[in-house]
Length: 112
Length: 115
Image 1 (cartoon, rainbow over the protein chains, first blue to last red):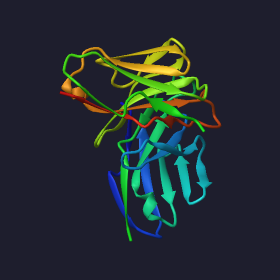
Image 2: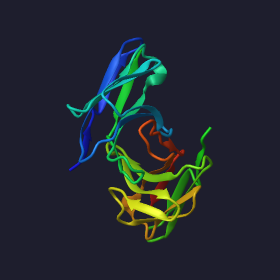
Image 3: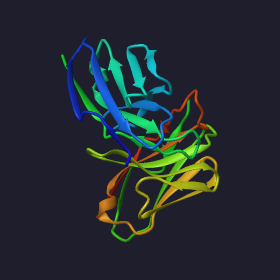
Image 4: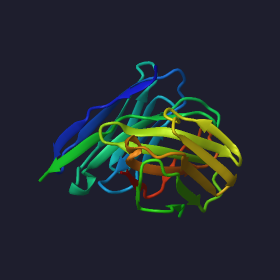
C-alpha cells in the first residue's frame, strides 16, 4: 500500500525552530510537497522537493532523502501566525495523471 | 493571482438527494482535483482530471462522479447523498506536471452536511 506518516501534533515556542518529519511508502515517487493550512482556510503551497537536499525559502526549509524515503519541513524564527496544520504530499508519478497522496497533517501549536 | 472558486461555502442536503459541487479556476490550468478532508485523515483524493473530458479515480471514488466539460470547470456529483459523505470538500487546480514545479491551488472549500 501507499502511505505517508507525519506526527499528529507538535508544540513549539515563539522564536524557536521546529522540524516536522514525513516518511513515505509509495509505489512511485516524483516529489515531496508541503502545504500549510490555517483553521478554516484552504491549504497553501509551501515547497516542493524533487531531488535530494535542502530547499530554502525564507524562514521555511524543506529537505528530502529519497534513499531514506524521508523528508522534513523546518520552520525557523517561529511566529504565532505559523500556528497551523502542515501536510506533506507525495506525487506518485511523472505524468499529469499521477496521483497525489497527502499525509494526515501535523498540527503545530506555538506558545508565546 | 490564481483563483479557484467553489459554488458554495456551506451546504445542507438530505439523504438520497443528488448534490452538485462546482469548482472554477481562472488560470487555464490543465489539472483539477477534488478532495475531501476529515479530521485526522488529511486530504483524500476523490477524482482528478488532467484534461477536458478526462478523469481518473483517486483513492475514494465510490459514491461520487465528476464532470469536466470545459477546461476551467470541474464538477463533483454525489449521486445519492449519504450521511457518511458529510465532510469538507476541497477543489484544487495545477499546471501541467513537470520537474520544476508542482503546486496545487486550492479553493476555499465547501462544508457539506447530509442529514
